[in-house]
Image (cartoon, rainbow, N blue to C red; front, side):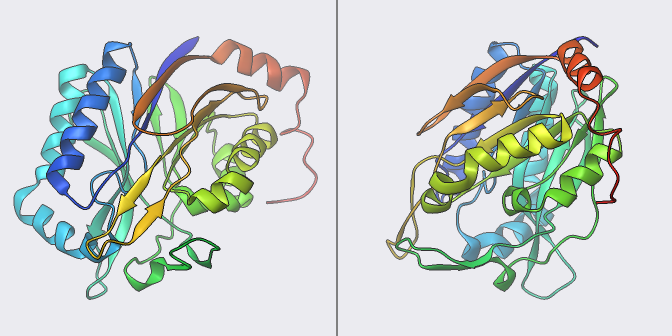
Length: 276
């Protein structure tokens, strides 16, 4: 495979599951109509409310609504769809995994990565502090999948700040890294682009980053603002495209031959002297 058409989907998800499902369907259709073979949705694409994660995971166990939706969309458009993150039941009472699930063109789920690093931080926005560990259990395993012979590495949002995760995926043969996210506006403005480009440069991998991009109102009326700026980064760190804010899709074609040439000219992965 010499090239791959890919899309990042930027959403402004809400606390209404049905609205989010409809929003995702429209944007998947738009991306597929532009020829995308791989479509990446953002973190919390189907529910933007940690308080509702366990309830949605329980409902999914009974209805399989998300699973059926993703399967149908992948088959309909004959593409790979990565649901940035959705809540999946864990063995810990009242808590879920934040799972990034991949569906192939035949509709089957072929991978499901559980977010390893949880966002337990204090941020200078109107929310103030975030404690994902209150509702989410961390995963413990790296995961990748193959797309027409290309190995693709999975991650979610806060994982982006831990370069060893991506180095290990690179060591396993990944040439494309996925970063679905719901980066806050404050942290995104400071760190989003520079971290994405760094992960691309140091691993000589393409990076697809699908972020939430707007204002999200909780059931209590509290507003959280996400940074947007979903982007696709080349294997040398060049920006191939960016969506600043709001809903939308960004589609481009990755030149895999060019990536091979980058690695041949500057074989940094072969020059490593220290383990990750």
